[in-house]
Structures are given as structure tokens and as C-alpha cells.
Length: 318
Image (cartoon, rainbow, N blue to C red):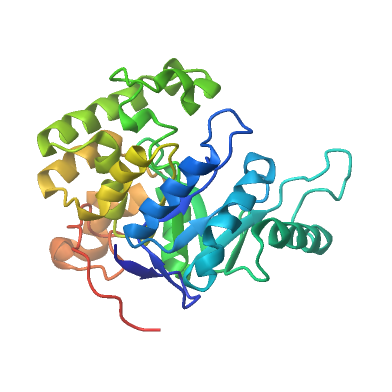
């Protein structure tokens, strides 16, 4: 496992975060305490140090379980939790990001976690501080229109939830996995709710996975790690074998040809101004016959339509 700077915070976090929305069984799809322990130990053995939870996950059980698991090594863990969602549906101040709710949520989270400090506190709604936590995967790339360009411009860290598209990209639904019947996607209307486009993307992913002789879940997360943005996928699981497939993504190098297949099959129209600025006509009007010779230090905007994905490099700076 390698480590990345979390935006401008100075924190060094592992390139995969451990998502713990599956810690606890109160919501019908989570893991029991002992399996949570095995998940946590597998993550730590792989070198992970970034644990993500929230005050509402599994009605508070997630924070309690996380607190128990990290207690003996709290100083080594970068611990993140969230607030914003209501704690009392009949109280107008029970939710939101105001100071009253912040104080209440922080006190309750620290108690459940059994610690006296947090390393990172997220708002469940958008925040302009040091990072963004957004839905991002091969089947949900619309954040490339605005949120990812904003993160580049403001030097914000990006953590990606849902890297497997509620399990659609894992293969268990499209290939008849043993645990498809109780998967999270079924709570959203089943595989039919995904739509033809997302199913086609999943099929392409599975074809690439077969070529690479790797599980689809591993390839899907590796694709995120290959993106130029400092994106940290949040990986969650109900079983250790699922987590091991997720963790294997850090060692999987996807060849450029296969990256292009995945990118082409899942690409979304970026709309104005991105598509406008990358069009041949505008590039020609701006830069004449040498548009193709101009390198853009920001990555892919506005000149280059395709960027080779860099290999991992050592982190430098503060």
C-alpha cells in the first residue's frame, strides 16, 4: 500500500480507505462484529491506515465497532467520521451543518468511537475545506464535469464512495454470484434498475477482467487508482475475501489498451465548456496548427483529449 497527501491537510493516508458502512447488521446487509474484526485486520495487514465511518452508519453501530477495533493503535489510524444527517426526525435542529448540530454530533461520535479526537470530520453535504467525498466509478462519472475539475483547481483531496456501483461492477449480479440475492443493489430495485448503459459498462469491465485474469472488482477499483486525480477509493465489504479482492487493486497495473477500452465504454459527455474547449474547431482558432504540440500542466484540460496515466511516484512536499 502506498500513501497520499490528503489535499492540503498534511495527513498521509493509504491509497485505499476502509469504508465501514457495512460494519454492523442493523441495516440488513452488513457484517457481524467478528467479521468486522477480520475485515479490519486484513486491511491493516495490507498497510491501510485510513478508516471512514459516519454517525448514522448502521444506527451508530459502525462507530462503536470501529472504536473497539482501533483502540489499541488509535495514534496510527487516520480516523474520519461524518455528520449532517438528522438525529431526531421531529427536531428542526436535529440535522444540518450548523454549530448546534456539530457539537451534538461530535460529542456523540467521540463517545461511540471511544476516542477524544478525530482526524477528519466530513459534512454529509458538500464542503469547501480540504477534501470531497463523492460517488465515482466506471458507472458514475458525471463528477468529471464539475467536481473533479474543481478539486484540481482548489487542490482538494477526493475520496470516492461506491467504486463498485452498489455491487454492479463486482460481477455477483451479472454472473450469478452466491451473494447476489442479498446484495445492496436489490434494495434499489435490482439489476434491472441499473439500466442498459450501466449493464453494458459492467459487461465491458468483465471482459477486461477476463483478459487480465483478475476479479472484476479488482479491475474496477484499479481503474480509479489509474485516474490522474488524487482519488482515494473507499472500499467496503461484508467478507474478508471480498475485501482482499478490493485490496488487490493496488498491485494491478492495467495496460493502456485496456484502460482505453474501459474509458471509452464508460465515458460521459462533459458538456460545456469542456467539450467546447476540446473541440478541434476551437483548438484551431486558439492555437492554429500547433495545438497538438501544446502540453497542459493541469492534465487533460483544455487541450489534450487523451492523457497517458502516470505510474505511481513517491510523494513529495509537505
